[in-house]
Image (cartoon, rainbow, N blue to C red; front, side, top):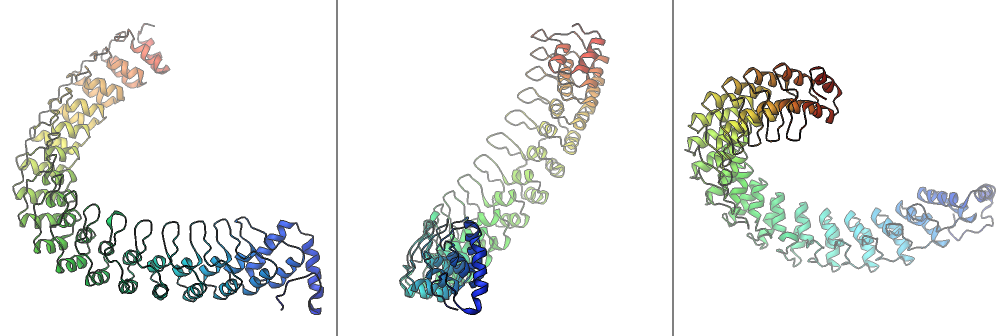
Length: 589
């Protein structure tokens, strides 16, 4: 079939009738419908339909919703005859869609070699860019369409153009491991050291993605092997982080700086340790990596391995002379890191190698505190066996291991610490005890253990709050009852004058209110503002609590400092049922 420019005159006798009917039908369609039809037909390769549409006057450069033309769509699907027909009928060869893509871009991206050749022979702009700065060469390179790459280069495509993010055809091909494309680009003068906007070169990209063959190809082209990207990343650093052993070896054999540091001071050895790439760690150590190098914050490779529970890596490092008691700037050691993570085997190894069991971080934290807080009972046993100080305190708050375990609800560790002579009544800087912390957080089992081991049930913190009061505030009825059974003072007041009954009434805890009243709680006690338990229960609408308080002799007409009564509180809280109850019980309006 001829691809000459279509006219309205009949072309071949066998087609005349059908063609004429098509034209009549198409001329009756709205212009926009004809454009959509042209677009679809071009993509499907329906040559007869496209010819008819053009003959009927359809705009060859009509656009779809994305501003693409039929030429772009035909190019994308590799419809060579349609492309030729559209061009012969005036299609704009460099028309761009909303993303800036041209027909050449589409064909190159999809590897449509024949279409690419037709477009280039018709003088398509070989270096046209999308809105993100990409070119046909970049996409063909990334997708590995080697024949398309060669044609584009032969037609003068600029090999070192960069996209908006600084990417090049070479960096994109290197990421994807397109070795043949990489070699072709290098032959045509691709700048092997051209960085993108993050400072990453093709070598760094290939190293990250594990493209060993590409790395080898790049290393033979005067690549800057120690080039640094954003944050100081090098090819060796990224390969070590990713565990690319073959690439690590290739880079080292070609002279990569084994102790190069990132901006934070991290080395390839540290990154490999943190990621548990023991084979890479072994390789780096064998080639002389500095086992005691430190990051800016003092972190070492051993710390990284310990924090991540990497026993085999820690063993390798210690065998190469890693210092076991190095402290970071925050004072943390490898043992603290292992204990915080609950890594028993690593903790045992470090202790066996002389780790200082009572080393303190800058806030006074110890390994025992870390393990106690985290609930790692076996680590706790190991540290206690190594003579960890069971009563050591943090500098900032005065917290002990027992307090950490109690506040986080670890009864087995609480018992272990008490068996090791932990001071059950030790005080924090705010005078809180382990019992106060456990009661406030509702750890019933811990509370029972502490009480059985002599905890002072009436100890007060700096705000004169007791374990009973705080358990009531937080609504832990079971804990409060356990404390009551051990003689907790029901009428003690905090520095605001509030009592446990006051708090339980506010929360609407009927069982606890009754338990407190049964133990002699003062039903008419007032806080510093003159508020009583009855006023609080009335304001919050706890009808059954109001009834219980009244049954125990609560003064229904008592007034607070603002001359308000329980009835006023119920009205203010909009609780009509409580209001009616109070009125019936003798409240004065």
